[in-house]
Amino acid sequence: MKLGQTKSQFVAVASIAAELSAVMGVAKEISLAAANAKAIAFRAGEKAKGFQPITDFINELAKDTIALVNDINEHALTLYQLTVNEYRMTYAHDKFEQVKVLAQGAAYSESLELPLTNSTQTMLECRRDFKMSVTQLLDQLAEVMHPARAARVIAANSRIEASQAGEYLQSLQAVAESVDNAAQVIHDNVQRCRTALSVIDLAD
Amino acid sequence: MKMTNIYEGSYQWVMFGRDDNKPEKIIDTNQYMVRTSERCLLIDPGGVELFAPMLAAVLHYAPVDQITDLFSSHQDPDVISSLGLWDQALPHAKLHASALWEGFLRHFGCDSIEYVAIPDAGGVIDLGSVELQVIPAHYMHASANFNIYDPKAKILMSGDIGAAIEGPGAPMFVDNFDAHVEKMRFFHQRWMPSNQAKRVWIERARELDIDILAPQHGRMFKGDDVKRFLDWFEALQVGIGI
Image 1 (cartoon, rainbow over the protein chains, first blue to last red):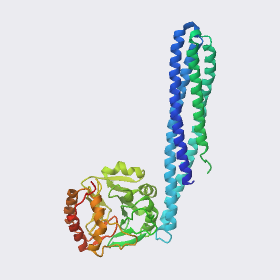
Image 2 (image 1 turned 180 degrees about the horizontal axis):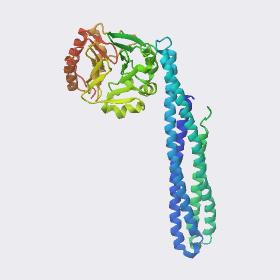
Image 3 (image 1 turned 90 degrees about the horizontal axis):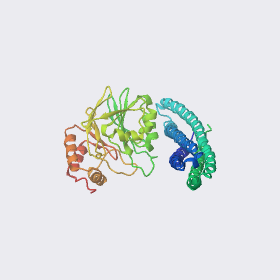
Image 4 (image 1 turned 90 degrees about the vertical axis):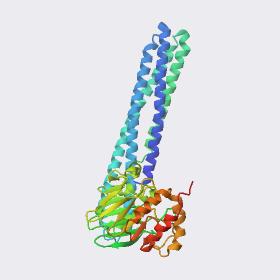
């Protein structure tokens, strides 16, 4: 493990936090679009009968996405703390190695062996925890892609239902458009999170 | 890192400083160690850049597991930014530092070391066979600031009080007080914020029997130069940065 590696980890974890913050904003927009669609569908009555259950789906999707992103955010914080621990440990280990060289010939230089061994051990543990955490985060990111994909399907159905809503056509099409765009943004942001994680070198 | 024994009795005081390999742009610092038969106290153990040469130097006197105590006179990085590294090396040690600075000093990393908070009134550090007094020196220069006094060795470790900015290779002790004054003047005028705090500290210092005044930067004062320093400092107007 090198200090430069932990520095790239800091950048990756910060990028993920930024992308997740954007995803959260978009998920809230979907939730708002669902509420808006519900109101329009209610006003449209029979003409938008097929649209009404779709609004519930949209709302559920937004809720699921928000819950998932909250979980991922917590996980990203853990990842950050693990990176801090690993950085500190790696830095300390490098310094202990320096002490070993400088203390050659000192009466008590051998007493450094225990801190050196301990720091090596802790460094390995930090690395193991970090790798495990990255794997879990990648799984969670894959999971958040599902609602985003479903949202795109729902947006397509919404367009069809909107086409039968008479004078409400434009309003409902706008809702469908908004959900579709939001789903695309979430997809792209989550993809960027995965890319940020993939640049971390998980090799020993 | 040069090592100078400044007291030899049933225990030792050692001064570490004048590291030839110190990065050029960081201020030179003096670190001190009180070594008893079983324990070690490191006084103002230094900045993060100095950790490796400092620990390597200490290993000439004591094994790692006998470095049991650290003391930080105040919160400056040149005093204690190495804390996070000591924290990894000495998981069972204690850090004696101001209660006021605890939340700040922990930013350097202090997960394993026990933080022993010193109240404003000061206290003692008990090393078993040696008891050291923690003397308040607030606003000299930090708002919470302490000195260490050893009544047996008659040494006052005075933190930034008595400090001088010197070139590399400066002698360990002041040998010509009058010539030394100009190396201290601006430092004390600019870094010491309060004449009132200065007067209180001087009164307190004059009650102590001091053979060696040991600052964190520059040369130490010995014998009559201690009194000369107190008189000079008393006459100096400080807090000129306004």
